[in-house]
Image (cartoon, rainbow, N blue to C red; front, side, top):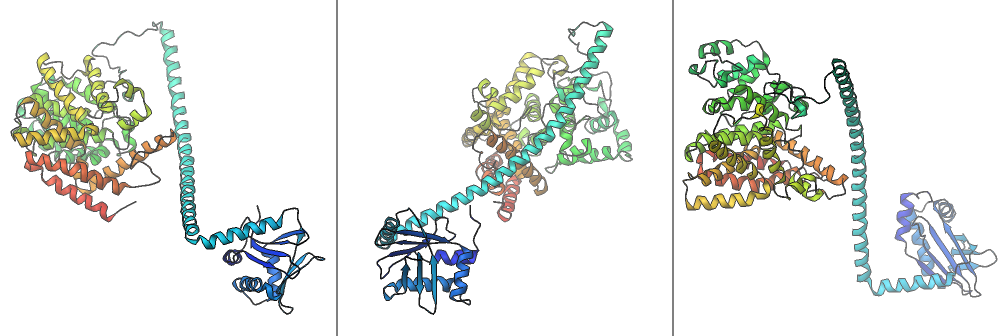
Length: 612
């Protein structure tokens, strides 16, 4: 490939059209832009069949220009060349066969192009160029249209090239991250293999049978979920839980011989006041402060998660002492007296909430903090929002609502149902492409509860258990956004027919709408909380887009990190999903109307901060 010519010379050259002339000796002369568009080609075909040509690049043309006129610009140089060809009949163009050179201009100011013999049929090339030149002038509009289309194609190709460069860089970054992850995983694998080898050696020395016996109900081993490693329950701080529990129990419930007090015995009210007025632990102070806002709309699970585990990102992978979901669920189950009313064994509850929290993956968005957030908002809708009073909720309904909110995204892999269907994953096949993740969430938890140490409903009758289970299933399946239109239409229809939703099916519909609202409530939260969630959902969307791209699938809308559109996606989501549904719910429980105002304010933020 020839070196790039100077921009000024090439720009002037490309303005100069192909030039034609016939000399006195009947030689046909043509100058044109070379095939690589960086030099000038001069061709001659003589009457006796001679063919001559040569290319003149920047260096040779500069030398010619210096001899012709040292002071002229490139534009003037090519204009004078064009003038000479236009007056070829006046003898300004000549060809000398003995020196195979073309001379342009007058004796005082002339250009001489030295050519070489060629085997190419120059006469045919000149004729073809003349025909093309004629076609351009006759069909000017058609040619201009072709030029416009070519320009568009060129721009598209440039855009595609830029996108490919970005994708290449992104893939390089992904490879780099994957290498780091591989190193971490390999290190962990070696540690586990070492531990396994030591355990097998110890077992061999002690003469234990290679088949492990089934653990009994009181065993501390847990093989249900790896994140808990070798325990049923988190390594909780008894004093911290005692403080939290005491905030939602009264003095009548201090007996230590009942199931709901068999792990933590609460303070008396006077002891609690004394204890919390002089907290020396920063963590306990932060958790206690968070608990004071559990009935408020701006309850902050990020602050609670940071207090419990150090931060709201890296800590999600382990949470050895529990996180925001662990504490929020523990508090609310006592606040609503679910532990007392359903005679729940406190040890089983701690096992259950530990394994549920451990079952949430450390995804950017669909993690245990999101579950804690949805649980809290569900509580808010039931209490201050007025749904419990409006629909005359039973204890079973309330229990199901809290349970469903806590587990609604259990074992979420960070990719949506659409991805599973497009990739035809095992789960898509298992659940026949219908509410894939939602079926997975609820069925997995009930499967866990077949183990006695996680059976939260062990102390109640079968009919009561069936009622609660049916409500939980209905609520969790309603969080499938693929069914959003169906649930909203059904809810609107019931509101038009009767505002008193007190029948069992109506109550379950209202509870389904409550958990749906809680699931997307971040759009109607105070701006600082909302923007944190918005950044996390964008993160998770882009990660799914990366997986789709790596599998050769097109990126789902708003999931391509190379074409960011957070603002556009958030505005569309609030316009078509959030605000209409919040409006509908506010018709049933007007005390939730303020959430619409929050959503409108958050939508306005993106109109001022468009990232597309």
